[in-house]
Image (cartoon, rainbow, N blue to C red; front, side, top):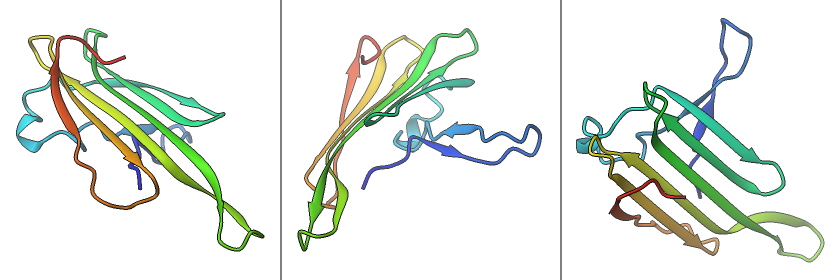
Amino acid sequence: MFQTLYRTEHSACHGQRPRRVAWTEELPPDLIGVVVPPVRFDIEQDHHIVADRSLGLDAQGQACFCAFRYVQTALRSEDDEFFYETPVYIETVTAWRLPDRRWITSHKVVRGAGGGAVVPQISLCEGMPR
């Protein structure tokens, strides 16, 4: 229903599980060479709700990628005996910085548990989304 902003992989060198951010996943392929690529990421997760934020930094330590995700869930039951948690609202914002300091921003909202295709709203902004 919603995509993962990062992937966890095993690291043979340190025995840790580093996270790799899928920063180009939503970016149209013809823009991959146009945006400023991040060289490192800061990832924050909220442990009380399903929400996370990824911030990509360029070689000078300036933000050049950001992704925010919020998922609201609700308990559902088909027999009033066994309950399960399901997403009822999902919002994601993903943005990439252009060399001229403007940002390409993708905003998606999914309401309900419908699995239909969601078309992102793409816009060009003067600053990084907050």
